[in-house]
Length: 68
Image 1: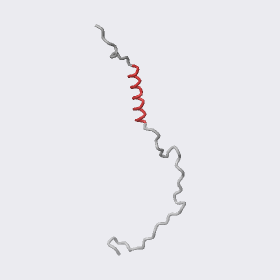
Image 2 (image 1 turned 180 degrees about the horizontal axis):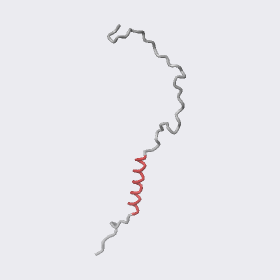
Image 3 (image 1 turned 135 degrees about the vertical axis):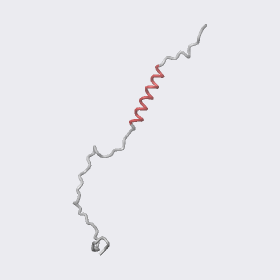
Image 4 (image 1 turned 45 degrees about the horizontal axis):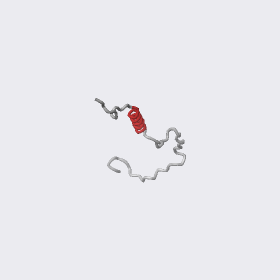
């Protein structure tokens, strides 16, 4: 007997059958997919295009010479 009051016994490897845990296929909607683009970068690109358009549409009076 051991200190815990149990008789020693021989350990056997655990055998798991092939139908122990049948797994159903994971739906395609749930599977992880690699994103094609970054939403954050898309927003930054849109803001940049709008900024460039505003600058192009702005009227610049710096090219006019001042006549006194």
